[in-house]
Amino acid sequence: MDKREFAIFASGLKTYYPREGLLPNDMAMELWFERLKDIPFNVAETVLHKWAETSKFSPSIADIREMAHDIQE
Image (cartoon, one colour):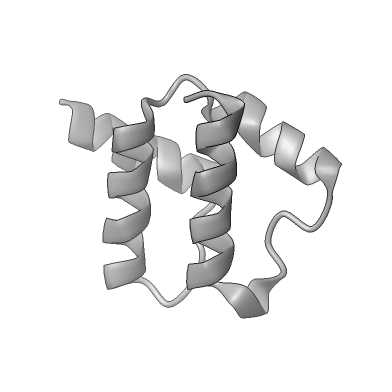
């Protein structure tokens, strides 16, 4: 995913989990983008929606990567 797509993903993450103070600054956004940029945007969106349906707590980078791997297989 590119930076524009990641911004959409990050906005969704913050919207689903507003109380957790996710991605509070530019450094956090950059670090998360670097760890997730190889995941196709459509897969990342699917992960986010599925996670929101099943968990009341926000996903970690590792959670996102693991679910993305499962979806892509």
